[in-house]
Structures are given as structure tokens and as C-alpha cells.
Amino acid sequence: MGVLAAMRTILPLALASGINLYLTVLVVGLSLRFNWVTNAPPGLAILASGPILLAAGVLYAIEFIADKVPLVDTLWDFIHTIIRPAGAILIASSALGAADPAVVGAAANLVGVNPRVQLAGAVIACAVALLSHSSKAGTRTAVNASGGGVTLVGVGLSLLEDLFVALMAFLALRYPLAANIVAGVIIVVLIVVLPQVLRWAWFTLRSTLAWIKGLVRPIRESEPPPPAAAQLLQGAPVRLSLNCQAQGHGAIRGRSGYLILSDGALIFVYKRWFRWREWRLPLNKIGRVELRRRLLLRVLDIGFSAGPASESVHFVASADRAPLIERAAALLAPRG
Image 1 (cartoon, rainbow, N blue to C red):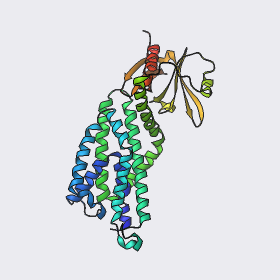
Image 2: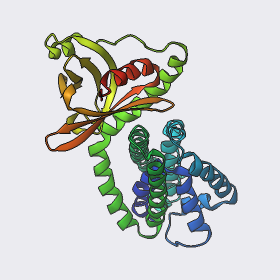
Image 3: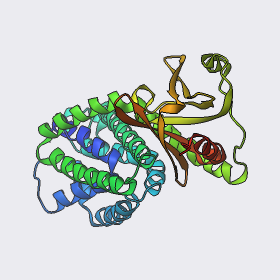
Image 4: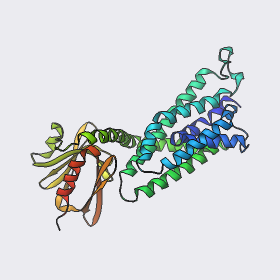
């Protein structure tokens, strides 16, 4: 098999590996072991060996369960931030390792392919796997912090991811052109949404560290916003202020900032394009307030009227800020 033919498998396999490395290895290995495909890169034959298939099967079984438990899935993704891209690099290197010795000079005869080509394939695989992994991890964090039915939605997403990975890994070997077209479209979409997804991934890491800190020293006093953001309040008295992240509503979706409770409005100040901005909700528009407790997070769910329609917005705070967001929920609760 030529180098170009081997390169065609790298993009879809890297995309799949970033989502579920062990299932990717399992599908590729089984496809080669049982001759479901005949035109795969020879270097991938190592994935069909018994020990690798056994290890991949056991690890996939563990991931199948872990990936469907809220917060456990987030921790699992965090652990695999390095493992999945590294696995994609190894798969790409294997695919190119026995591509075509005829294309290289004598200096490259140890690897069977021009080292620069192999390095390029490894870099591409690492970048694509890191992109898909970050998107998966950030999306799952957002789901865990969202409304009701979290467990059901998370299980559904996990099953869809498994199905996608299995199909993508098989298509990469059997129909590489179709797999590359699908992978290319998905990569473009992921690049567009990546900034918001990465904000949630970073928020997950901070929330984990904050949960540990909150076990010893929770934050009980208001956290005043920076002076530049405070100017947006125009002198309005502040009853409570805390650092959090918004979700589920318009321009503030996925933004980090400060939730501020004043006498007449709920204000969220956040930074966008190096400028502080505000989102304001009059208190008399609030019709529903619900506080949901998670291991790493506290989610303040607010329903409000917007003209004839009803809308909702979520504010997510790390667990060490539980006293603050619980006080905000009590202050905002409609008096009936």
C-alpha cells in the first residue's frame, strides 16, 4: 500500500480515537483479524494481535460504564486528555510504518517510510484527536451542568458516540474516501464550536480543583467583580456577587463572569472581545428559581418571562461557592 493510501486512514481514525480510543483499536483490530477489510495499511496489523485486542476490549468495557455515569465521565475524559491523542499518534505511525519502502531513501529504511511523512501524519493525528477529545469532554461537562434528565441525555450521547466511533473506524478501512469526507465536515464544525467547548473543559478543571478546596475552605463572602466590570453597574447597590459561568441563553451561553444581585435586577457581567459586557434581568420577570446540586457544581436554574414566551438561563458555580449560590437562590426565590 502506498503512502497516500495509508494517509487516507489517518484523519478518520484520529477523529474516532479522540472520542473513544479503545473502541477504535477494537474495531480496527477485529476488522483485520476476521478479514472484514482487505485494503488496510499493513502497519495496522499489529492491532489485530490477541494481547492488544484483549487489552482494548477490557478497557472499552470499563469506559462503556464510566462514560455513562455523570461526573465519572468528566473525570474519565480528564484522565484521557493525553492518552487519546497519544494513541492516535501511535495508530498513525503504525499505518505509515509499513506503507511503501520504495518511497524512501536508505536513511529511512528503519521505519519503512520517510520520517518527515511519518512525523506529519503523527502531528495531524494528534491535533485531530485533541480536537475531538476536547469537544467531547466540553460537551459532556455542559450536559452534566444542564437541566433535568442529565443521566438519560448523557447515556444517549455516549451510545451515539460509540456508534459513531465504530462506524468511522470501519469506514476508514473499508471506504476511506467517504470516511475522510465525513471527518472533514465534522472537523470544520468542531473548529467553529471549539472556543465555547474549551471554555467548558477549562471550567471542568477549575471546578475539580475548587471542589477539593471547598472541602477545607468554602467561599462565603461576595466576590466583587473587577473595577472595569463594576462600572457597568452604574452605582447600583450590590446585595450579592459571585463568579460563575452562564449556560443556555443567547450571547452569554458558555461565558464566564460575575452574577450580581442588585435591588431591582439580576446582572451578569462577562468579558467578550476584551471588553466587559452585561446581561440584565429585572427581578419582576423571574418566575422560577431552582438550585441543583452536583458533586463538582451548583446549578442555579432561572425561568423568566420574555414577552409572551418563557425562557430559562442557568448559572453554574464551582462547589466551593455553594454558600454563595445557595444564598442567591434563596434571595431570588419568588415570594408567593
